[in-house]
Length: 275
Image (tube, rainbow, N blue to C red; front, side):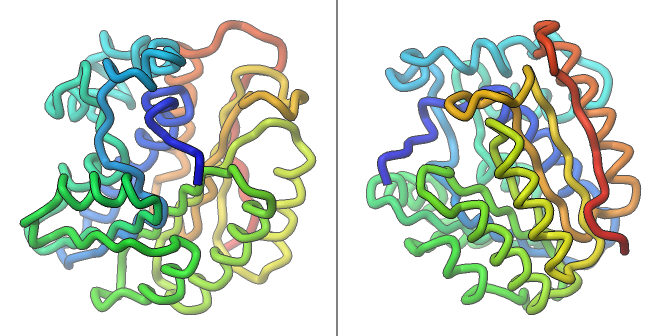
């Protein structure tokens, strides 16, 4: 419970996660019927990049801070939403970003277990009839809050990876939701420090029987140092039509601006399980 995302808000991993999240949401909006989004590890929703935590690390300056001149291309809509939210210094996390694009009949469910962060999140969305905020464990919520009554939607799984066994819990959680909510789209973020845990995670998903899975990944350097965040990934179950192509364009645009030419940098969209 000692992880606080305020130290890392707006870093390269957030840029990747949120740009892809927006495309998933836009793809869900292609159909007129309402959908629901469940964010299992929501944080505080919005981050102040002039706060002591963000200033102490300066991660956002090497992340979203390098992108704000962009007005065209696959990152343009996400960055326009950031500006609308007040960037800088406001950086909208996944709850705020999702809320910005919900239609009147769509719903957002947020889970946050940290006492102070939950209070901040609840205050942010107080009085909003489209948003429900729960103080509960995100892993438990995968069972308690699925399937959705709308029969379609997105489950965003984004744990802090501060405890042992998070990859195993994520693989189990994805399989649980796929069994309970077959039509649901799932997006699960994970860090890439070195390859062994990621390979084991991908193998567990491939062996789980869950169908239609892709992995979107970006690396800023060779993933060989287990003490350093060298890259990150987003596993997507039931990716919407054309999402894989859009993800490749987003990752390429991010690497162009955030990459430093280090050995091993790159990106990939890989299929882990067929439809």
